[in-house]
Length: 127
Image 1: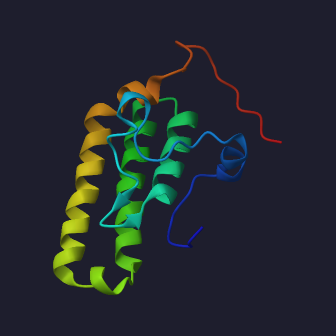
Image 2: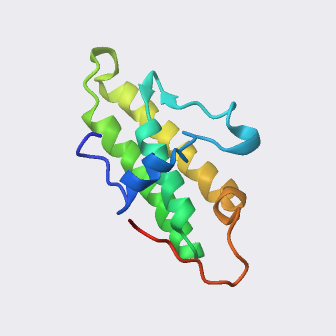
């Protein structure tokens, strides 16, 4: 994974569990592309999935959503594909990243709270 993607501790275990479903989840998985202007952002969405999996509070969700946006912004900044390497295209890409962020901020609660225990402590065992 590229060094500009900030991942959560334990992300390697997440990959081993094969829980990352890329961008989008559930009913909208087919509607949410894993690319922005041909640049894959799956490596930004997978840490977001992991953060949702381990998060337990609304603050955790908000941090995960901000991290997704910032990871996509970092990836856009480091993208050197010749046809995407100009200010106009990069501004369009950043706008799309902002759309992803606004979407998870507004509509990601169902995915975040899915399978969380109601008020019970959840223990994550790291091997």
